[in-house]
Length: 309
Image (cartoon, one colour):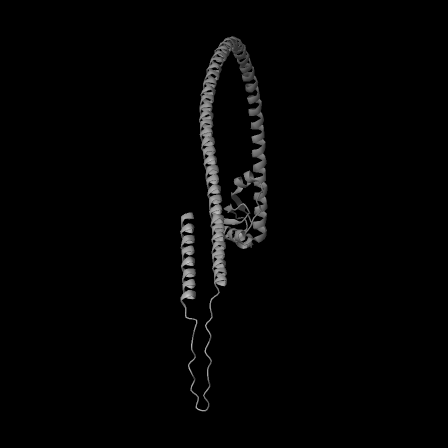
């Protein structure tokens, strides 16, 4: 960049020198005399005076030349100062860039050093961790082996104590079993005697109760039979001339509600039996016991119809 600015500056100086030399040559070689051509006028002819030649003052010319030289020198100095400033800025920028590059290199070097240190630290930590894990594994193995040995010893001691306790318990149990067997045999004999006595008593009592119950049920069946006969008599149409002294035995089937499901003739006079069946179906529902056992006895009940006059 400095070479470029320097070349441009030299070209500008040479161009300025050539222009000034040309200007000076024109000033010296120029014709300062001139004649005016008469202008044609239709009315009046005018006379034109000739222009007098002017001689260039050498002092003024030198002054002008010196001024040009001074201007060139000032321009050259300004250009040099400008170029110096540019070069200084470029040098400063170069120094700053070099300084920044050096700083970056230093930082990069420090980063690499730190990275290496970190890698070494990580490696050391990893190795330390591996060693610690290995040591911990060995410690746990030793603890497990110790615990296994202690457990084995405890189990052996426990088995020995259990065997002793089992032997003692077996002896005690055998004694208890003998005593218990004797006690059970005696209790069984006593119980057999008591159960026989109780069974005999219960048999007598049950027989008594069954007999009483049977008597009660038969009594109830007879009672309901009498009620049913009374209902039939109430619904029966009697004819003295055809029924007097005659009877009929009917078998009546009943539902738990007393509803008559069937009435059939067992034996007896046909006229009385027909009148009795009509009376049964006319009643529709006959008295029955609410007791299931008694009802079962009278579900199919036999009644005898004897018209009274």
